Image (spheres, rainbow over the protein chains, first blue to last red):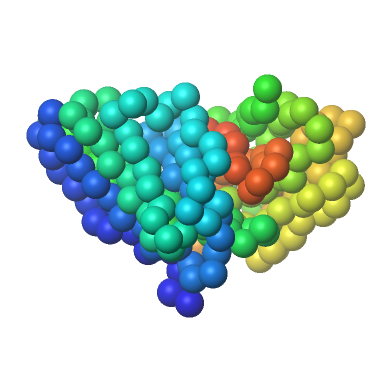
Length: 111
Length: 111
């Protein structure tokens, strides 16, 4: 068990480009979450999956954001047509009906 | 709605001082309550939790008691160390392990 793994750790992109982040949860964890954390703030919930089903999406998740979890294992978060306001740390977490474990995050900088 | 309010930082203490970080919450129903810690350059780690009223969570010398009557979950430690310097987040979970975080409190401990 190597914990929740996120890739890449850092991403710098130009405004208007698309980016995709990957999250590998702890094996056998059936729930997977995405959060966004901006400087000086706590993480904000974006969306969550139970197995492969996306069960809840925050209103923060605009139509430029899409998340998938094919086969109920790893997950991807894609942001299309990035904007400077998308610059943040994107955190992935997983759980199995109990404690929630976080990855180290992907820091996105949109220039 | 559900929300968490925690005291603003930074909290600056000398080693071996007593620590209190205040956290209050608003929630419908009976949420679980958590403290997470984020050490410099690391991901969020669960510090302690309490799942029902009057429960006390404890770990690494830190404690917090779920007070339903005052809707509070204050974090305390009797004697802080330099290694406790980090950002501490109070959070609640109304259901499905989805977490709602406060804005975080930075603790700085000096020798």
